[in-house]
Every structure is written in C-alpha cells, then in structure tokens.
Image 1 (cartoon, rainbow, N blue to C red):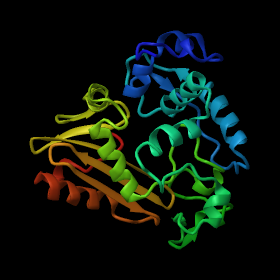
Image 2 (image 1 turned 180 degrees about the vertical axis):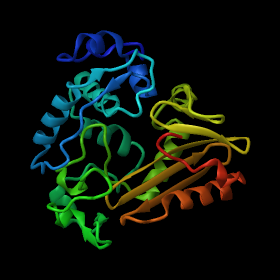
Image 3 (image 1 turned 90 degrees about the horizontal axis):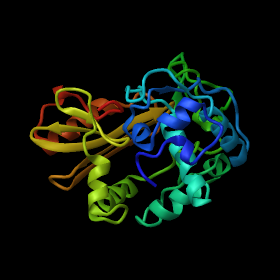
Image 4 (image 1 turned 90 degrees about the vertical axis):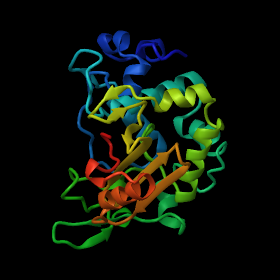
Length: 283
C-alpha cells in the first residue's frame, strides 16, 4: 500500500472523482474535500452485520464538495473509508484486525470493540449517564428511547457496536500502554511512527493536523492529543513525547469539565499556559 493510492485502488462503488482523486494521504490528513450525509442517529442497530452494512453504504454516499486538498472539517468518510480499505487488504473485519494487531500487540487487555449485549452484562464496562433537557441524567444504554438534546439527538447505546473506524472501549492504563507502544516501535517502526505524528496542515500559530491526531507546540515541546465525546461519554488522551508523560481523562457522565481538566494537565506537564487552549479534535 502507498499513501498516494486513491480510494479506487482498493474499493468499488464510489463516485469517479473520489475513486480517482482522493488518496489515503488525503483522508488521513483530513483534507480530502469530501462530505458525508448525516447519520441516522435514531436507528437502533441489532447486529455487527447491520452496523457494517450501514457504515459501508453511508461511506459510499460521500461526495466531493471541494477540491481535493481542501480541509474537510473531519468528514466521517475519512475514517470510515480507510477502515473499509483495511478490510479489503487484509480479508478481516476492521474490528478483528485492530483487536489482533494493535490491542493485543500493545498488551491492551481491557480494550475492545464490545457489543451492546456485552455492555449491558459486563460490570467492568462503564455506562454513559446522559443529561436530558430537564437536567436529569439517565443511563443511555438502558434507555435507548432517550436522546441527547445537546448532540443531535444521539444516544451511544443505539449502536450495537461502534462503526468501523469509530470508537471502542478502553481503560486509562491501556491508553498509556498504546502511547508507549507508539513510541517504542511496538506498533510502528520509528520512521513510520514519526510520520504518523508529523505536522501536516497548519490549524493555528502552533497547532497542526497530523494523520488523524491533532498536534501542537506548547512551551517549546510537542504535544499529541485526541479528545472527544458522545452523550454521557468524554475522553482526552495526550502524549508529551519530550518528557514521556501520557495524560488520560475519561468521563461517563455529561457535564464533566473535560476541557478545563485537560488544560490543567497540559500546564502541569509543560508549564505552558492553558490560555493557549486544551487538546481537542481540531488541535
């Protein structure tokens, strides 16, 4: 595989302009120029097969809405299509491939793409407490009829399993293990690990997009970070390669001050001012 390979090298069923022009590099760097239709957030999925079929069909509805090379504001297809390419190349499902070749290799024994039945029965998996319009909270996975009034009517429990390329379940120690594995060659050899986190697109004076991971310079040192959430779910994961520190913040209830906590973490590790902003999806 080459980063310059276009989508059509591996997959069929996409519009000609996407198949011929959008490359792996464009998708990983977040400048494919693509857009994807809104997701069906009300649908309650009942199997892995149903989730996969929907995700595959949804990704193929993507459209090129700007010249290739234009930042896409995190189009969902930019993670869904590479996941489908992994399946085409390896002959395995995305879930199985990542479980075997990343989670297991890194010793991430508490991390998995768990299904809703496992979520409901395994007491080790935290449940998301979603805030409703009246300020009350409900266990989202046990109340699939309830939706978040703040995040486009979503309820994370409606997904039988997270879509290929999307999230999963992880523990804080496992995310630290992955960060160390990324730095010591367990996941990628040194040149390719450097390529993964190298700055690709400028987002601000000292913040950049790399391959799916926003990176920034804080007080003279690099910081790699991902943060995001769902109703009742919040996560922030940061790597400080110059010092070896790794920061993980996980929340299973709406309203947690995730940004403030991540800014305080950044200041504690780097001495940089939190006024520069905390780690986030856009860096």
